Image (tube, rainbow, N blue to C red; front, side):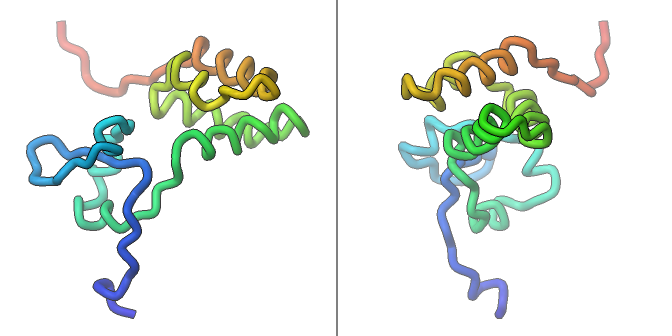
Length: 124
């Protein structure tokens, strides 16, 4: 199967490239961006990646920890919170059902206790 034969699935988590001629749709304007993706992939390659929606992806990481104490899921959720710089509002959007109170509390602890490692060189 040639590269051009790949199905062009629109990414759900739209990524924006500053200074490039990508057309940004309405759903992309409210999405979260990740500059790290573009360090290794071109815009054309990213356009065919099937990104999962953030909310179901995040809930699928938090739920196993709350229900079964799956430590690996908790670590992945923490890495997602740190990497995407998720805040309290983002966590509340992911867990808007009152039955998800335990998952929301876990997510809020991650968001409020996150440690963002900035590896950029600082000059003062």
